[in-house]
Each structure stands twice: as C-alpha cells, then as structure tokens.
Image (tube, rainbow, N blue to C red; front, top):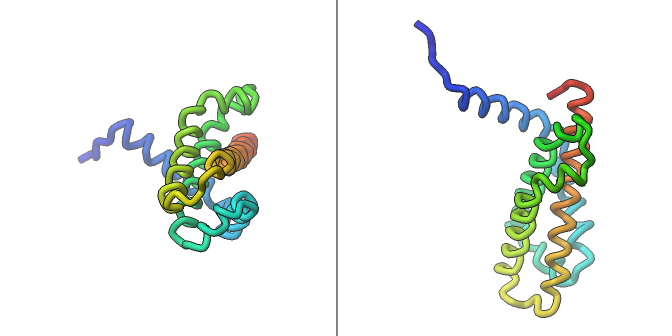
Length: 147
C-alpha cells in the first residue's frame, strides 16, 4: 500500500527543510545586535525597546525578511542583480516595514510625534538590512550547492 502525497505537500516540506537549514546561520546575538544598532540611536525607539515583547516582534520581522531574501536569492544566482531581485519582492519588503512601523506606533501610544517619519525609515532600513543578509547567505548556499 502506497502513501499518496501531493506536489503541494512535497513543496512545503522542501521549503521547511530549506528554511531550517538557512536559519541555522543566524544567532540570537546577531538579532539583538542589529536591533540595538538600528533602533538604539533613536530616543523614542530605544525607550520602546525596554519592553521584551517589542524586541521579539523585531526579531520576528527580521527572520521573515531574512527568509524572504534567502528564498529570492536563487534569482541572483541566475544573473540578476540584487536590486532587480529586490524589485521582485518589493511588496513583501514594504509589508514587513509597514508591519513593524505600525507595531511600534501602536505600542508607543502616540508619543512619537514628529519622530514618526524617522521611525519609519529606521524600520525600513532594519528590514532591508535583514533582507540583504538573507539574500547574500542564500546566494552563497546556492553557489556551494547547499540548497
């Protein structure tokens, strides 16, 4: 008796396996350092980062952006520049930036005032840096045939 599986199930299993292998390359220490690097300079954001839940939300967004960059890195291996690849997933990157920004605004209780625009740019830079890191790690894995 054979077990019948669908292509969608196999594709999902392969994706989970790839994500597990790529996530082994980042550490909690790296996540913490990038949060401090990007949000530590802003007085408003550094006050918010005292809450552990907000820092964990930053980690979640970072991991998602990292995985997105790693998944789209296969296009870079085929000859596209990282800017061309970034245009392919522009909406997803924008969504991660908006999500993090809105989360910080919600937990800031409107205290940001005129700082909201600079906070958005901080969130955008944070997401972009994680996307680029994931893209570079994914490209390296593809070149080494570890995918």
